[in-house]
Length: 92
Length: 201
Image (tube, rainbow over all chains, first blue to last red; front, side, top):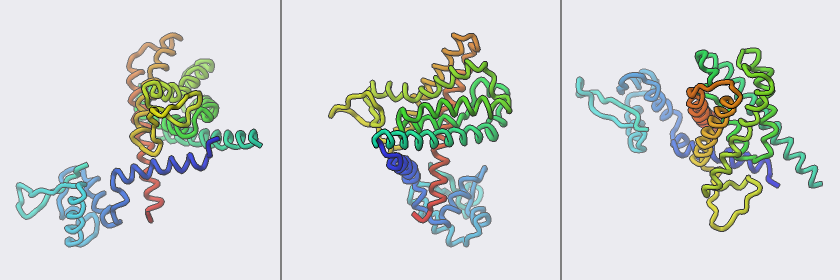
């Protein structure tokens, strides 16, 4: 006879596997704030915009973007119109 | 004692199934069907209650079927009727609800025939060569979702065709995509909610 609680545990494990797949749990709250700012931006997202919307300092945002890039979640490239500015897009 | 345990399990599964289907049905009714056009009645483009069918049959097996049937009839006849979703005569509502309730089971048996078996299924002899569906793996659940959406769309289309209710092929497409999209949205939303509520992980 199957155990009800055991079946539920398997179900929760399946949901947690989705978290693992999308690396949600690997992000700190600040990293999530940056990630969701990029996620919800409709048009081109640059670092100034992330700094404004996330409320974090520029240096913190730079560090976080580097980590997200290392985790293969985003990619950053130089803006064609302004060489000092980086454009950030989602990789997933 | 054994009968008591069986009854307890049956009640636990039935209550869980009924509540989860009902909850998803109400969310669907309020947030999704209201944003769709009248052609939504040819099959919603995002039918999230299908997730309740897939998940309960996968995790609880055939024990969930009676509750799924009752939930579908109750939700459509009582709740859906108020919002004009219940467009079928009662006998056809029973027929379509029955097909909808067993569509996941048929899909899972069809997959078992192809070699992908599931441990919660009865009446199946497992051998050492059997490949089991891993209920911890969301990709396997998504595969069941796609198969069951195909079975559901096809069975409802054939039923409607035979009963002379509708011959519109758009219904098949809308049921198929609606069931898949609805289930995926539900599973991913649940996963995200689980992460948000238990972020101390």
